[in-house]
Length: 56
Image (cartoon, rainbow, N blue to C red; front, top):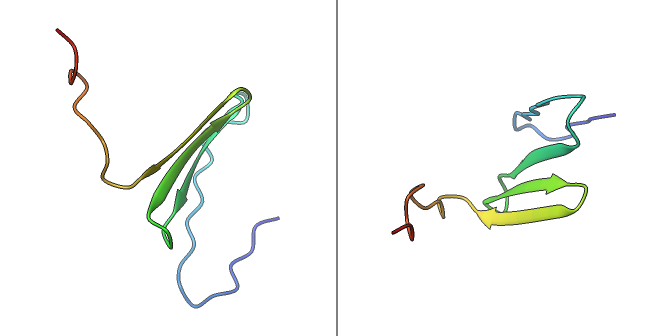
């Protein structure tokens, strides 16, 4: 069950029902989470790096 008990709009993105991962956006704290069975990553919005950064 998903509920929004605020006056602000709520957004929910369902990526897949087959793959065991989810991506969550936390707008109040400015974070994005990627969660899977044996993996968890939570980062601040806008902290992305270029795909080739650090590659020689």
